[in-house]
Image (cartoon, rainbow, N blue to C red):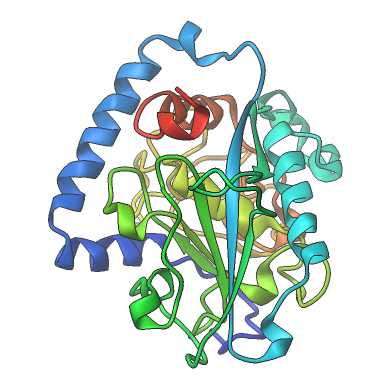
Amino acid sequence: MEEQNGSSRRMCGAAAAYYLAVESHPEYRQGHREAEIATARMLAAPEALIPAEPITIPLVVHVVYNDDSEKISDEQIESQITVLNQDFAATNPNTANVPDVWAGFVADTNIRFALASDDPEGNSTSGITRTQTDRTEFGIDDSVKSVDTGGVDPWDPDRFANVWVCNLAGGLLGYAQFPGGPPELDGVVILNTAFGTTGTATAPFNGGQTGTHELGHYLNLYHIWHPDNTCSDGDEVADTPNQEGPNYGTPVFPSESCDNGPDGDMFMNFMDYVDDANMFMFTPQQAARMMATLQGPRSGLAGM
């Protein structure tokens, strides 16, 4: 993998960040296990997972920059919010490119996003913070999430989804914390050149789908392949085909692995590793899993 800012292949650090965080916060392992149990309990009552109207998650975007070129604009941030709402509503234009065999699996998640209008103290806010740092880059050690290590402390993670936008090292596009982790680390981190669709956003990751992918993790979705690169179900979702490992770039349908022909891998799923222009869809079961998370371990975000 090339050093970013010109990565040619997607790399997500969610799994590695989880194992690193568990080393210093061993309670995270149990917390995530309890979140999984709560999610499974909600999934057992699927009729409860269809809200009367979409649930809107309040976001706060923390822009952490060293050089002014990294101080992304409001326009770039708004472009990311637009993409999130299209992707999670299945109104993104490229759903037309989903292969016919999976056209019926394209799901509106009933989840939406908006920049927070009130801060933790109840004061009016744009939902955006900007902080200059002496750090030239960050990694998966969560240092961007603390003032003491050159970053910004999160807003109350029970009420806000925290998104840090910064320069990430080593070709990393982003990472997220799964439910059940330490509150001081909770949220999503995204590379500033893989955020939104304008400004500093750089091809092939200038479609905003890194944000979609990482917020999927934040809402307890896993990568679509088994973490051990085996051909068994690894994402806890029944309507995604088993696949051997990640797909990169611009695969051509069908792309088979794990004897999953004739249709092959669902590489256009937001939880694979393909380029932004080739990510099209969440499935109904992925939508249900995220909604169960919002009605369980992350219920504070939904005002429940």
